[in-house]
Length: 339
Image (cartoon, rainbow, N blue to C red; front, side):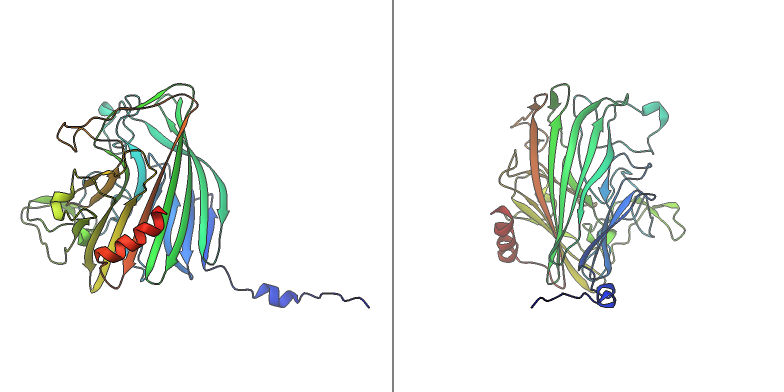
């Protein structure tokens, strides 16, 4: 006796989509990542950026935690540092070229020596119920188009309860020439957060108004500005900048929503534990290669990557909503990442 397995085509049509869904839109130069049907973040590489980024980032409740300006200005935001967009990875001095500060807002008379990270292709895109994966290739280029580094990055998107997780595993391969990462404070992986997660400050600044226009505010309104950095070493606030740590937890509230935004450095990374480029105005970064400025000149690292050789960096971002995470919970999550 033989059996024939019959597949109901109607049932196939109604199969549930993966909980973590990746959708590519080549025309708009983006890959969108959603969790349970709600947008989480997007990998974008438009022509008006000088590097691919993840933008924007949201909590499990859908709250935006990254600054909108300059791509999507929101009232009350700072309009400094136009190269601070979403979550990015680059460096301030690579064979003399500045990949960190480059943006289309730089005046034509001051266009050098900047490098550009140019997206090449999506190599892998996998949706899933427990995780989603995206693998991409980019080139770190000189102004004449010469490729200094090929970047292969593996993003892993996952979640647990009210926590969203992004792993970024970045491999840089030197091409035809040796590549020197001269000691520089501007690097390596970083985010620019929304106004509410900044440290409260009363200094005069320029912000966007309700129409998206720049406006000088001589006296800043700090209502709803609640951010506080805390490092794995117990440093808090502005004291975190220029210190080493395994992780840093940026805690605050957006409206009535308590949030912890944690950036982690992996023990296998060069320069571990990283120095932290964490500024009260909302720049939040881990620098594995910049020692001099962070240590007040006590340490120096000028890293050389020979032609044909590779180096890999691993970092994790946790976005937790509903509470701010105490040290013991962050350490538990960190141990899972590091192991």
